[in-house]
Structures are given as C-alpha cells and as structure tokens.
Image (cartoon, rainbow, N blue to C red; front, side):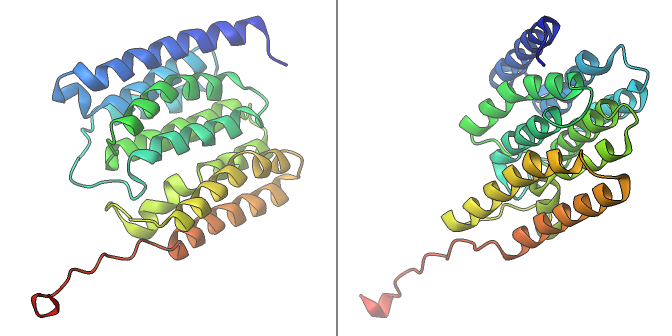
Amino acid sequence: MIERYHLVLAAWAVGAGLVWALASRVAPPLVQRRLVALAGLTGAVLGAWNDPRRWPWLVVAVLVVAWADDTDRLHPLGEWAAPLTVVSLVGVWASVPDTEPALAAGAVLAPLALALAVGRRPVGPAGTVALGVAVLGSVWVGSAGWGAALATVSAIGVVAAAPIVDGFRRTRLSPVGWSAVVATQLMLSVPLSRVIMRQSVVVAVMLSAMGLTAALLVMAVAPGQQPQSRARPEDN
C-alpha cells in the first residue's frame, strides 16, 4: 500500500534526480564522470538513512563515487544500461518487504537515466558498478533480512550479464536482439521477483540463479547487426 510518506520520499528523490540530470549537461568533467555514482549515493541516503541495515550500502556507495568513469570503455548496452536498471529497481520495489530503498534509488536514477539516454551517453565500468550497487543495496536493505527477498537480486538481469559476456565494449544489437534483451529484463525484474518472494529460501535462490543464467544466455545469443558491406572499386 502506498502511503503519504512514500509520495513525499518519491518527490524528494525525483527532485534530486532532476538536479543530477541537469548536472549531466552543465557540470564540469570531474562531476560528469561520477554522476551515476552520485545519483546512487543520493538514493542510498534517501532510501536507507534510518534503516539499521544501511551501512554496507552507504559505505560502498561512497567508495564508488571516488572512481571516475572511463568513457573509452562502454557498457555493452550503451546509454540504455541506466534505464534498464530503473526497470530492475521497479521490480525490487514491487517485491521486497521494505519498498522505500528501491523507491528512492529508482526515483533518483530515473531522471538521470532519461537524460543519459536522450544524450546518447553510455556508462563505463564505474557507472556500471554504481548501477549494480543501487540494485544490490536496495535488495539488501529492502529485504529486511528475509532470505527469499535477497534472491530478488536477479532483477539486475542483463545490466550485469552484458559486461560479463561482452566486456566493456559497445554491442551492436539488431532489433530482434534488443527485443530479446528488453523482454528478458522485464521478465526478470517484475514477474520473476514477485514469484521468488513466495518461495522458500532454497527455491528462491534456485529461481534467482536460473534468472541470471537466462540473462547471460540471452546476451550470448542475442543477434547483432550485420556490418554494412562497402562496394569495392571493381564493382563500380
């Protein structure tokens, strides 16, 4: 059930996210290369400050801010890695017992993710780690110590699977490939996460492992774009 304080938290988080989205256009390079990490830290502070399980998330989020992103090593999903992480956080929010961490993390990240997608600005290794920390931290704090809830970490899906399969280089997917990637992320984020929450810990871990394996397989077999052939001089 959505309470009034959830709406207040979401409003503050979206406001903070809009600040980071604006910073993506006007901030100096020192800040630009840490924007995703800064948004992740903001979400951690807003979503977990009063929770006794907050410290691992906050400490790791602070450490990631110190790591400048490398714009020469790109996430395989390019500028869509951040929006797909927002999808992950929606799934965590819809599944775990304590929804505030995922709500805050997702609401802060969403405006920045949109700005990065519109500006066609992919994240690098540091940004990818920051996205992962946002999901893992939301699961850790939001689980409230419930074992099955921790297994919803599979919601991270293709955001984590893509660099494992392809490394940090841009992958040129075909429309069919992109459809498979997006469909997999949606399935892992919401339906699977909610099913996991209804299982015993053992079954939940098995389902989570199967979901992550599916994400790896999809990234491994997703069809890419065929390179355009150039006409040879003798063909003219």
